[in-house]
Image 1 (tube, rainbow, N blue to C red):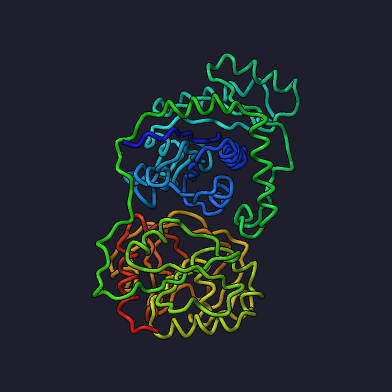
Image 2: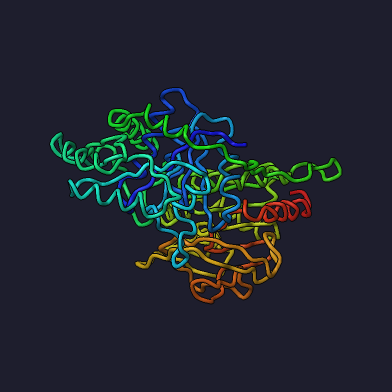
Length: 455
């Protein structure tokens, strides 16, 4: 049984202040000395970085589309083990989920799977009495979703607060917090959302501190903790990245180098855990700063991020680009997602990249965004041909050509197409996947690393 007090922080719509409130609550409770487990509904990589900064623990995603509904509670239990409180930030509006698929992957569905009370964050900047009708509608839409209270955000004045409280007195839901307009807690955004923590350093620390202070001043933390404790125990075993232990006959643990730093910030914590459990030694490196791969690198994982923001710097690091190219051409396993795909291309916005793929990448005005159903077109170090996986695309770049002679994936949603590249040991694609849903991906990748002669 999993008995962690927990709250889901939701909102009627995007841009209501969920990230500010959720991150602020994490920081405020952590400042009280509590071990706070941070979670994010959906595929978002950026918000968990702020959550991690607030709590000192890995931010983890709960994605019912990519991982399936059966894994949501076990993944939550894994991440929250030993914690005093878990705070789950929602995605979009409370009832918004995967396009055209009902409640799937919505905050409401995750709240029900976790049996967690919901705190509704309402942007009250342009309303007064109407807030009661809004809250009543959200609270009554699905009787299985338990909204335990409201936090009013962007409140203008004492008079405005009084009007909102009077209106909500009739709703039966308590006001658990009132947060005034505070531009100092805003975080800068750009073409794919908030600027990641790794790119802001001390500014991000200051922003998270300000969020915590604002939430601590405006919210009833004792009442919120009491609400969190009303969540019943979950009868779910925690997810575990477990495989058969490596034997001496298998030799030393192969080194899997994982790209990090400011240009490659998108990663699920479970991926490194799965690689380690499969027998690898995971070592992080920074393509912006390191001029060589970690010693003994047998495999390479280059996840998502913002290489388009650092194309000149990535291009200028010629020693590392040569090392990546040599490793890829040797047949070593290389898994590249989105940003990694761009880094392996011949050039990005006219700047030379690694040249492993005969393709050119550039920024575009068009946002590509959404869940995908995919099938592996050919064998690779990640999957055998015919393997079906679910994933997510999120980018404003285009790659020409979009697919190589041996594509990585055949897409079946929303349109049928092939995408990505498989070449020797390289699997490169725009598709983000969550390996917890298919742990054999990490095991297969490490087995391919073991099969190569030591470098």
